[in-house]
Length: 240
Image (cartoon, rainbow, N blue to C red; front, side, top):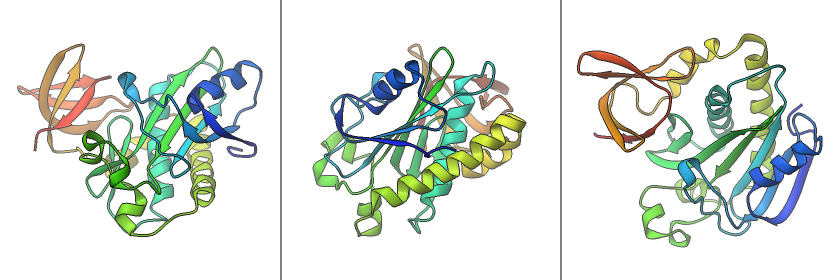
């Protein structure tokens, strides 16, 4: 069960780094790493993840899928689990921006970084909980929010971590049995960008189009120039 054992640290470079080391030494499926502070927290494409001391959730989960598995769909499954968990703590509008961000009221609340080892997958989850806009850099604060800023109250981090572990366990078990196909409709219902024009940047090339949803592999379906393209990776920016 995910969350049956939680390793707590005061400070780490990143919880994904610690999870990788523990997994290499044999830590079991479902073990969770939580840190008060990350000194080198990171997101996709080498971005920095800002995490003010002891106010936000910095956690990573060790998963040991049976057989070979693509880590990409697990990012989407984790996004659904996190969004479903967070709806218990906010009345705001939660949405998922492909492939790895959870948004609250139009601003980024959570980022997910999934990394694959030899026989395991680590899912890193960073969520702005009790940080305030004034604590973040100007660049980040213009795009991000926190539960505290949106709900005007302070939250217990342990309560939220427990709920995330519960939902992630439920959804992961479904994924392990049935694969990603049953998640397509559910993911599309959470999507921030469906039916909206976006620009997708990958390897310095930009593709513009309207998002139709995702397919059974988790790829983004983009209508561009009358053709539907399957986008398997890229940085998505809303055009409108």
